[in-house]
Amino acid sequence: MYLPRLFGCMLSTACSEQTVPTYDANGDGVYFSYGNKEALNATVNFADSILTAPKEIGVSLKLKLMGRDSDHPRKVVLKSRAVEGVAQAMVVCPEVVFKPGEHEKTVTVLAQRPSIVDSTFQAQVYIDASDPESQIGEGIKDFQAFTVHVKEAYSKPAQWDGMASSYLGEWTADKMKLMVKVTKRNDFYNERDYYKFVQWNLAGVDSLRKVQKASPQTAITIAIPFTNDNAYEKPWYWSSLQDTYLGNYQSGAFVGLCNSMDITTANEYAQLGGNEATMRKTKPQCGAPHDAAIQHLLS
Image (cartoon, rainbow, N blue to C red; front, side, top):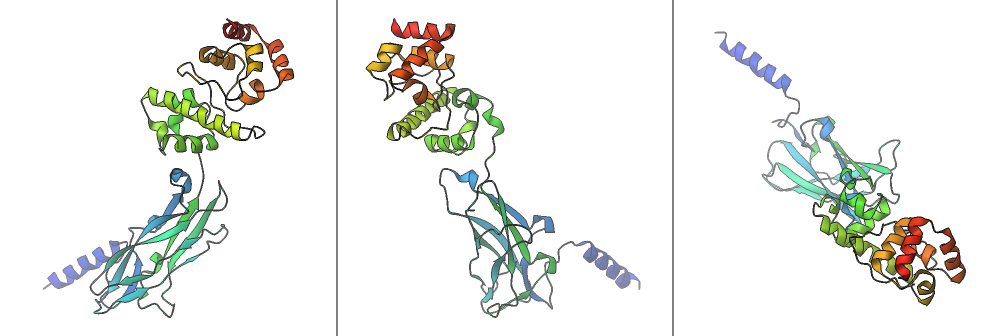
């Protein structure tokens, strides 16, 4: 005779421990279907998509209905709003319609590329059950909004301090962007084949030299070192003037000269591509390693 009461208590306890109710026979609502409130967040970093350089990135959101089934399609209205105290991210929300018998749906909102680098923007995607076009009521109260964090923030990968550092030099955001385009890989720094880095060093140098040649007065800010593992072609600026002061071009001696003078792609043209006055100033600055490189070039 005590079984019904005991069973009722057990059922009551089970319900009280449930963190997110998923069904209400008397209700009629929609909510973001996640296990806890902390999960109602997603971060989009456009810096992770250098290769494709998208203007927008999709964020998948899970929706779920509560209440009785319907025999006709019902529209859910999603909107985007600012988060207090934070610059607003631009997010485009799709039209959402639940078909008859459909209880769960994954929709995609489109986060727009932020206008400022290294700043985080936020937007709250929320279910507007009060909108005149909404055909489904409000579901679970604490699961009516989802926050999207949007940024374009670059940071040095931990893997950079290896072959990437040896063949490409110190990490910078601009260097990262260049090498992604050169290698056609967002995660090139994970490569374990050192010969790939040798090739990428050469490709990076060639790419920056083309930029410098096209605009000699524009400073190159990306510093890639010259390495003995590569044979570099004679640079575009090298003429009889350089032959006179530095000798006929040889890649090995050129690398030695650059290493002795701390010359990289960032200052190569400024140091070695100048007029005769610049060339005259270069030679008196020679130390012992520099002199050896000059003698090698002249031999």
